[in-house]
Image (cartoon, rainbow, N blue to C red; front, side, top):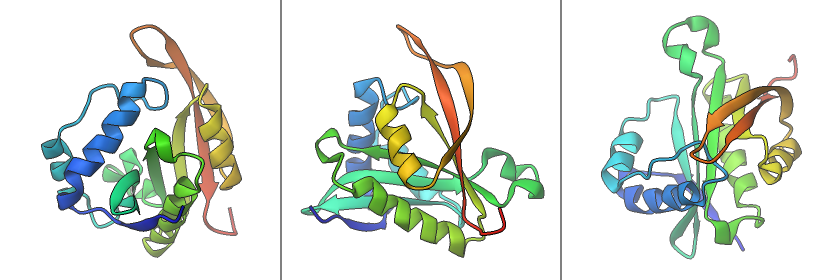
Length: 170
């Protein structure tokens, strides 16, 4: 199964919302808990800054996965954090395990390097062993665990913090 990876546009909002909501409704793999609307996603995509991108994976002209890369949340307050990006990945359950996540990550890594990022960080719910394995194969290393960091209606979950350096001098 070959996926085409491209930057998402505001016109992709409906398909992006569908993918996000499908993962949100699973209630296990993302800390996001509130479904998003097409308008929410159109606004989000249109508002991405120059150093941010959403990549979409298409199979047979259908968006089946997305990955967002953005500056670290503190970068808006300090120049000292401008070299760090964060990513998030959401893939339709029917398309997991088909190298779509890897293809999205390759696009994000290329984007990161061309936008002067030196490191990418990500937070993964600790019992999402599949995601932890996946990010490990991409070169991410676990650097810590935040206990009971995500609180769902029926349980609290730890969150693993991972990072990947993009430069050789890390």
